[in-house]
Image (cartoon, rainbow, N blue to C red; front, side, top):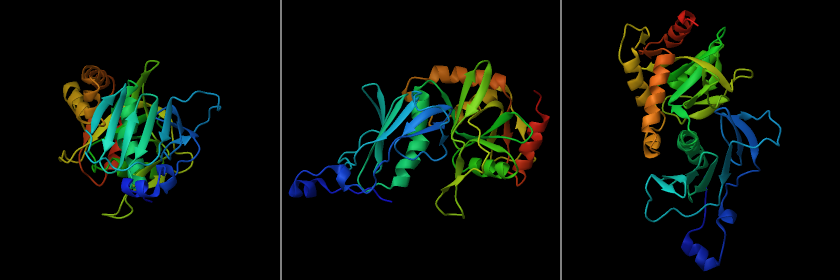
Length: 307
């Protein structure tokens, strides 16, 4: 689906016409959801978020709104900039996202695909809001394996196979905690992982566009204590996970933060470094080399982890 609005010249020729009447994409009524262990009220789809179990009178932690379509700017604004306490993320030819810790407002540009807008909401605007709320955001998926009460975060760059491995583990009985973006928080003396556990994005065939795949019923967890972090690597280590020392773990955690330019832009480098140090001391971090038996290797790894 494409978002369409008349050009400014056409509008002037026809008189004043609001963008909303020209758009083929209309946001719906706000829906209450949960994701990243937060109560979300959103007028746009949030793939992977779960229906909120809490009563309607509870105040939402995050509101997501869609404004009217507007023409693309003649001069492209900076990718990130501050404006009145908000972080503005301007995605070329797609939309402008005004991000705060408790609100995301989306202004789509004419001609943008709805899937592009939704994709950037999940990939950048939502992580930006989490960073602004004081969270730590890892570029990772996370699952809880059968018979365990701890999650394992699967980190790595785009295309490393995080979602593919998480989906394979869910197919073997694991519960999904997060796909692609993991919020890690220290709550009541425990490190906890959360995300959008309702499904993952995957390409049905090689070279095809990725699409959302819902998790099976009963295989989604809103949050879970964190047991380990695994970073997917392209380097061979005899096909088995290799545990790294805390200093190397800090470096890997810093390298695998989700949208690392955002905490830097927010001035959060020092506290981000401190949290990485705490995380590296609290849970083991492993490098997992490329192998067809990655899922089996992770299952064996979690079985051997001490409590």
